[in-house]
Image (cartoon, rainbow, N blue to C red; front, side, top):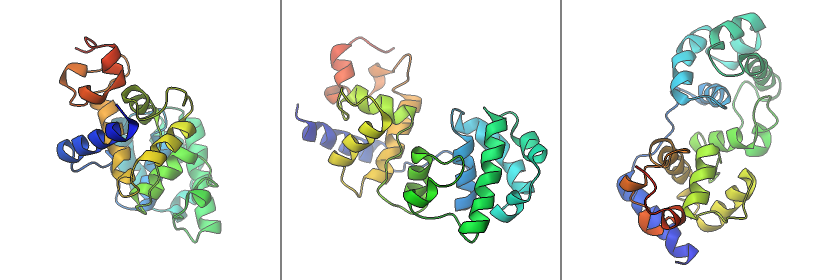
Length: 217
């Protein structure tokens, strides 16, 4: 099967089966999403959603968070993975927003990655979800699913190389939604240790399934 045909099948499948695909992080504005995505690194969205309501109650915006004491922030996020580093990142991020961006979340990946705690993946999420830009955040789910299905080359062994593979073949209009398609598929179907191949509608085009036809179940 040609790469173009595989992509077309995947796009048509998700368009039908997952017409509404969006982040499972809970937020009310760009600042809150930025905080939530920083917290979500190596942590589940479910856990982040348990922590952020109280965090946002204390620090609803960049201005308030920029004035916070470390111990205050740490106490509110201590159940999150790496709370020490993330507390520092959140405070540094808020201060930079206030000092350099008029307390507003910037809209480009280049500006976003300047913020403490914001790498390329986080920047792509914000640019895509908030500003509807055709950016593809490659987290562990996107990386795994793309390579398993065959959307990314087997030689693409870094998140950036997978990101470039996806950019080359996905229409720009689809990229923001495709990010969520691949994340949710990886979270609930194409699991890391035990993929649910028996219930997956991508069997006809999935390279992993073709090599492991009884994998699943």
